[in-house]
Image 1 (cartoon, rainbow, N blue to C red):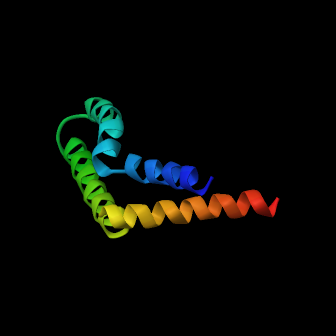
Image 2 (image 1 turned 90 degrees about the horizontal axis):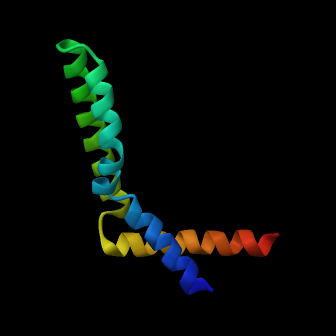
Length: 88
């Protein structure tokens, strides 16, 4: 049971990679940019998405950036689920 929960947590950690998040958000950002008038508003939106992306990448690298960190995080998630299940 613990192994399957750890795998579940590991898959969650892998799905949060910046490249996967970028692929999911890109269509929304492109649609938003097309609705904004060209000029300062469009440049502001592009700059904001770049800053948010850099911030997310650095946060990801600090918490889940290596496979060891992802394994530890998945173990924590799995342990949390086990505690929640057993406490009820």
